[in-house]
Image (cartoon, rainbow, N blue to C red):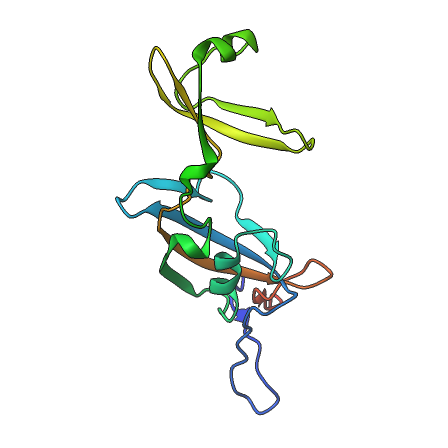
Length: 174
């Protein structure tokens, strides 16, 4: 069996390199760490990330890093908190009496996420971040707010509108 691949070339014979750009759908393998080396997410354990550049379905910093990459290219970048989830905002925290949570049918424990309906009808996700006998701290900040990230992105494929991509196609068997 012939395993040679056909590599796209321009009419003048030069190698044609496809680069990701606005409006294109891409498939990306990724890893994300905190500054202390804690791995917070990766596509190793699930399918690669697939998104269309410019649709804002992923963090802007990911779109920005992928834009201009060639298929097969890898990038590792440090991303400041301001470019993904923003700064940590203490005003998004509040303290409540543990008895209030109990009256709502909530058994308080660290890390528990609680969906709170606001007066205007919007729902805010808050996480229990501190507890003692008198007070429970609820925090509406995203868990990555105020934390810089290290992102590694590997562009696997640029997918066209028909769903096929720019991966080289195997040459016909001889």
